[in-house]
Amino acid sequence: METLTASQKMSQAKDFLPINGTDHIELYVGNAKQAAHYYKTAFGFQSLAYAGPETGVRDTASYVLKQGKIRLVLTTPLKSENPISEHIYKHGDGVKILALWVDDAYKAFEETTNRGAKVYMEPVTKTDEFGEVRMSGIYTYGETIHLFVERKNYKGIFLPGYKEWKSEYNPAEGGLLYVDHCVGNVGWNRMNDTVKWYEDVMGFANILSFDDKQINTEYSALMSKVMSNGNGYVKFPINEPAEGKKKSQIEEYLEFYEGEGVQHIAVATADIIKTVRELKARGVEFLNTPNAYYEDLLNRVGKIDEDIAPLQELGILVDRDDEGYLLQIFTKPVEDRPTLFFEIIQRKGAQSFGAGNFKALFESIEREQAKRGNL
Image (cartoon, rainbow, N blue to C red; front, top):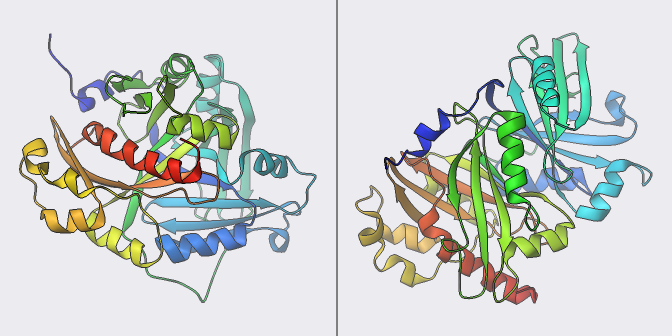
């Protein structure tokens, strides 16, 4: 039987919902001003826009950061009697909205809700002196939202209601280019329902699948399926826990996030060695990789352009598929709850997600879990 590559499987998506990429990712956080300082300092994001009391918004403050094509929105409530306060109390800091850039936000809403999507935001047109933005939204797994954003008739800094945010503190960028993928963790026996939702409601295709026989360590296991739209601009791997001797990283996430949600944001770079070295110098903490991982690396992945020494020094992982290879590394959680973290990835043709690294990665995560007493 002929085996299709990930790229070939993408072409099988029912692309009734054209998506141009990730518009922005919004995190609900306890203190947006301080979180913005962290992402600027540690990752090299740049000040872009702001909305809050000074712009006429009375109940929240939002800071928008940009690097490459990545836009992060950090939103905090200004009073306790606010749904966002309740969200943060339950989940801690984390991703609430995965906003998708579409050609027609009204049609995207109609297509997805007709296929069974739960409504988050009815279609709305927001305007200011720079034009109009049309938006709509639906719920995906847990309390996570897909917001459809249509901005072809808008020339403003971000969205209506936001003003340019100028700052005298502007650290250099960290070499981050765009959102490669966002990974979601779902509960026990929820994988197939979530995959079917993305197939039926969003028209996505399942381009890669891994079961607990492929993703396991001595102590724990999980299952993962990668969902992609037709052009491959948006990919959402979905993880589900599997039975193991001890608590898996997915179970730990579900326990501390208190529900399903976004586990990590993967961001692309063109020079992972330079980027990781820079981010480490700024205080970003990465998972450690044992030296033994590099002893037979070239035998496992074949010839690569990079020298092994800096990869080993920084703990960068390498994997290959039928279309090329990739380099990747994962941060430790970026808040005190062991929930959200980031992945830095550089693709050299590969369209996969580092299956050959899963064992090394998860053993590294388990070492951190053990330190927290959660393994």
